[in-house]
Image 1 (cartoon, helix red, strand yellow):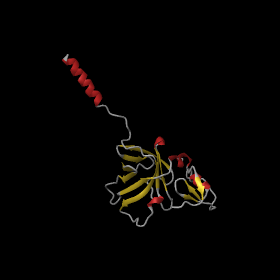
Image 2: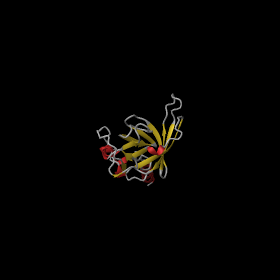
Image 3: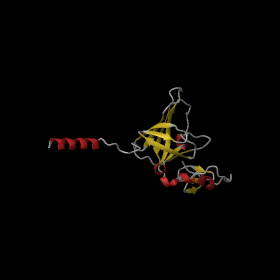
Image 4: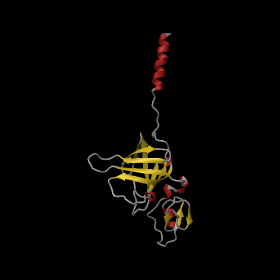
Length: 185
């Protein structure tokens, strides 16, 4: 009888130590996040961080770092979908293999670049706040910023809160809906 009990306890112990297959221990991060602050050894005084957004599409393992290509702060290729992986609190971008620790709070995410110890002053931390736009606002597979559009200025306000120079440009940035006229901030 003792052998049966010991065998039962041993088997129970083995199965209680099983490992889960969860790839990400970070709560689901999905949709629009708007940059609020950057902490680094760089000169960003009087910079409007809110012009920069990060969009997460976890079902497709894609993220898009959106902003003005001439004046933006990006963690991946500007305005293009990038593959990513989150594992053990580390966000890895597949296109450039950069890694960031990721801390998810209630309506905020904090990304800290995992720096190279051989390079001085490459530490940078980004603080993003959850935005109000619906995830359907941006279709990452429809982004085609190299497609030609006319230069005419017929502004539209995208569902992501950005003003685009015309409807063609908005569509090229993957915007699913917009209103005629500039966005009012």
